[in-house]
Length: 115
Length: 111
Image 1: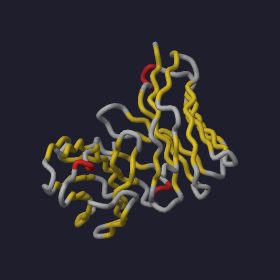
Image 2: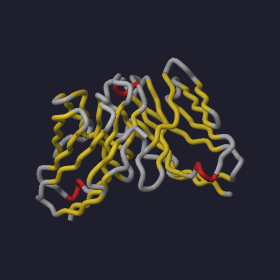
Image 3: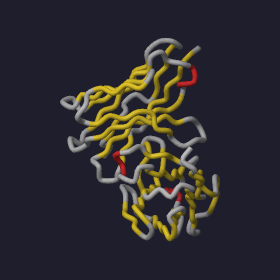
Image 4: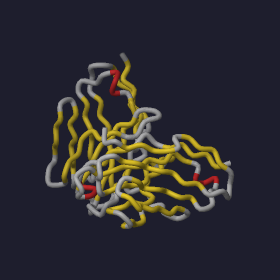
């Protein structure tokens, strides 16, 4: 257990509303990631962070922004949610600090439905 | 375009037999490969990995084989147990902080 929590665990929202998902870790790991999981696509990287205020885009970053003002929290924001962003969102951390060459540990996920 | 492919969406195996899950990739720059296991309503959990400088890595009942020339890797589970029933994802990396995942294979181990 890498001490990763995600909140909320479930959310239903309407198209056009802003949504923020939170990932919290308790062990001060440097690398944090946001993925989305969709049928037929597996998991796809949205954004990642390699330190406080240091973030970069992943494979499917359009429509998402992130922030990391503290080591332990990595926030994912949908500025104006669309139905195509209905998905299960997973946060992950890399425990060794050397990025993706070491296994990533995942949080329990947030199921987001955009109506 | 899917760079990591798992062409079998599902697999059923009898308890005690071998499970073989397959994964193909297209990007020759991938140099590190991982397998994850996922139960419903939980996050994926790391299972086993292999570097491109190796062709086999073993951890208990789990063995991953890598065939670089064929751009193919496989996960062998021997013997299979009912608790192994889950969705298995393979993933690959170029080392650029981006893991590329396959679409997953649902393994069902029949008691």
